[in-house]
Amino acid sequence: MKKIVSIIALLLIVTSCVSTQSTIKNVDDNAPTLKLLDYNTFAITEYSKDKKYGYDKDYPINIFYGGTKNETINPQRFLNALAGPNGEKITFTKLESCCPFPTKRSEMGAGLLDVYELKWEGQRNPVTLYLNIYEKGVLMVPFGLTLKKN
Image 1: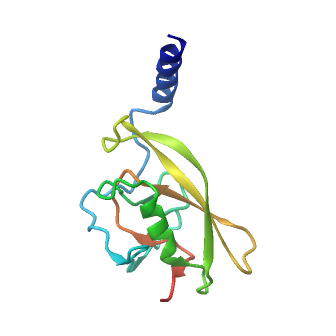
Image 2: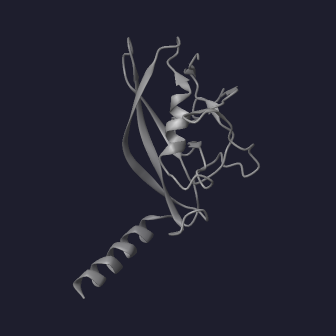
C-alpha cells in the first residue's frame, strides 16, 4: 500500500512540474527524415546561424527517436557527427536531464531535455548542448562547431 501511495505522489509531483504550454520554439514535424552516414553517425549538411540552437533550452536540438525505440542512440549519432571549431575531436558526457515539457510523443505526456557537455583539446570552457529526443526538427551543426571529417 505504501508503494502505491509513493508512486501516486511521485506522479503528481512530476506532472505538476510540467507546464501545459511548451516553451520549445524550434519543433518542425515536417523536418526531413534523419539519415545515417554509418550506424553510429548522422549525416548533417546544414550549419545553424542561430547562436541559440542547441545552447538554449528553448531551442534544443530535436532528434526524434521514435523509429529506433532506443532513447540513447540518436543523441550519440548526432554528437558523433560533430567536431570542435577547428575540426578537433570532441568527447561528450551526458550531465543530466532537465526542463520538463509537454509532448504527445511520450507515454507520460511529458518529456525531458538531455544536457550534454562537449570537450576538445585546447578548449577554454566546455560547451553545453540541449538535446530533445521527443520532437522532430532539422538537424544542424550548432554555431561554433564543425562536422567531423571522415
